[in-house]
Image 1 (spheres, helix red, strand yellow):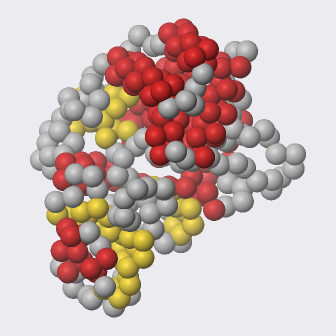
Image 2 (tube, one colour):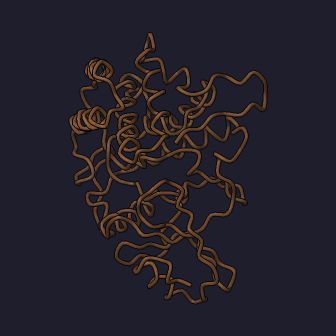
Length: 323
């Protein structure tokens, strides 16, 4: 049965004390590659998540950084080459709830704030690596000058989106102007998640809140990570305020809010270029958010307004999510 799994994942499965009884692909994103993430059920009743990553370095980095991040993030239990076994967290993803409570959203913000407050490892793939001072980094994930890295990414993704025909020339011009207007002087760099959103957050059966998809953990600008969360998980104004309040208990969001249009542009362009590259119809969602940002009279205030759906007309109304 494990023959359906990638090679190095098969060796991890074979090393388990109980035989495998079922293997179910759970990769949700559109991809040209075969499934690489699986729910593994064993004869003794245990469940694990198995996945093959892009490289051995990514697998080592994920193991190192989830260990540093602690119980808020599902842990890597075994690794070999580019494959890992993770704990399986039974529960319900926040994206599957009809309406997420404000208190729960605040807990999510606190999770990301705690992650950003951690001291960054000098080498995130080295289990014995020393740590640097908080908010600094010395690794290839992103250079210590997070602003220059972000500006280069904006230029590259803008060029790709134009080349693929999803952004008009005048829109690209407006993006460049807005980015320059809100470009920050500096940006703190440390451990970031890059995909912190409701669909990757599970409220476990015993009540704890766990981020269960952590292959994207790396070093990068904290404020870009906040922007990614805003664009991947649009919330109404009350939800966003609750998220930022929880976050602020561990790290100030003031720098992010001052330069929010810059970081939101980068986050949206990453999604636009990626989806356009895949030919995905989902590119319309980040394009719509980009249009809202460019049309906003005071773009620096857009995060406070939620950068998501409007306030529901009544208690219990649903909230929109985007990929």
